Structures are given as C-alpha cells and as structure tokens.
Length: 257
Ligand SMILES: C[S@@+](CC[C@H](N)C(=O)[O-])C[C@H]1O[C@@H](n2cnc3c(N)ncnc32)[C@H](O)[C@@H]1O
Image (tube, rainbow, N blue to C red; front, side, top):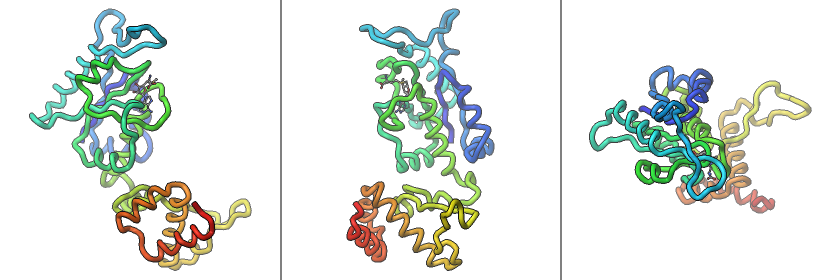
C-alpha cells in the first residue's frame, strides 16, 4: 500500500512517523509513505504557491499550477499500472466526514494521493480537474489538511496486520462492523481503588462469562446513551441478542434515551 501526501508542510509528518503504534506500519514497510512539497514545483525566485483570490476578500488561495506539476511528478514516480491510477483525495470541509467504514476501505486499498490544502483553500480548477474524492474531519475548520491526513493515515495504519501488538485489540474497538458496530466499553486498570472509586466487581471476578456480559452491557448502555443510531443499525443488521434487547428494554424503562 502506498500513500503520497502533497503538503506545504511535510515537516509536520516526521514526528508521527517516528513514534507510537502507527510508526510500525511505516518502519516495517506495510505502508509506503512519500511526502511531496508543491513549493518545489513552483517557479521564480520566491517559488510562489499562493496568490490573492479573484473577486477580492481575505486570505490567499493555493495556485493550481505548482500543485498540478507536483501531482504529475507523483504520478510518474508511482508508475501505477494503466487503469489502476491511485485516486486523488483532497482534505476539505466540503468532503464526506471520515468514518470507520471508509477507513476500512482505505486500509484494504492499494493507497491514494492525499492533498492537504492551506490558506483559504485550493484554486477550484485544480479540484475540478484532478480530485476524485474529498474527506472532511468534521464540521470545523482546520488551518490545513495535514492533521486530517495524519488522522486518516493513523487510522489506516492501526488496521494493518501486525501493527497492534494484540491482534484482537481493534476487534473490540468502537465502530467495528465485524463485531457489532457499537461503542467500546469502559476500561480500568490498577489500582483496584482510586480516589474512592472501585473497579466494577465483575471485572475482578475472574469469571469469563460474567466479564463478557458486563462488557457487552456497558457497550450497549454507552451506545444507547451517546449514539442511539448505532443501536438502530446493529438491530437492523440482526446483531443484537435476546439478552441485549432485554438490557435495552430495561434502560428504556429506567428513562434512558
Ligand atoms: C483554513 S482551511 C480553508 C477553509 C475554507 N476556506 C472553508 O471555510 O471551508 C485550509 C485547509 O485546511 C483543510 N481543512 C480545513 N478544515 C478541514 C476539515 N474539517 N476537514 C478536512 N480538512 C480541512 C483543507 O485542506 C483546507 O483547504
């Protein structure tokens, strides 16, 4: 899998490549990551990559031409087989908000060319000519697409086989459709009592079935409280058992949303 990132600030990526769990995916070559700076494809002494917006208004807009030359260089370097050209993805508030199902698709894909905007954004003509998909991180405005690119790369990296020490770890994570798509349960570690709060007795019982039922109930409870849409989806997919439905009915009777 190969990701190429087009960014005016490639230095933002180095710390991420050198630390934490995701580092393994890049160090072990599971993900080939290449960084490209459009400034290196700009002309003139100042290697200008932005200019004022037509029509006036605040801020600057990224020029289409350096981006276009940079993209050409990426394409030449990738040398993708005919008909298998990597998709070009732009991070933008315009895009579909990133969610687990999309991350899973990217994690199983051959990769993509990711473009990070800066300033007021990118000349629309470049977007119309070259961009295949747009991804948003949420309904807020970042100063650049780099954090969005890092979020996608991190989420994709941790799904690569061997990246997490415990292969079962992401099985139990929130949003996993292969399990139930629900939120994860709360977690506790030592000491057994902290600031007057004790770890739930079930987790200390050593009784496997009891622990699993406690975890399942907390997943259901948390999800019903914070993301009832995920409960509805799990029900529609037939992923809720009779004990699950009994717990949800008790929560509703007790006045939970
Ligand atoms: C300051 S923002 C531009 C915001 C733009 N003028 C607007 O209001 O929609 C600069 C760049 O940050 C990135 N960006 C900002 N918010 C984002 C979000 N929610 N998700 C993904 N990328 C984002 C985009 O690449 C964008 O071109």
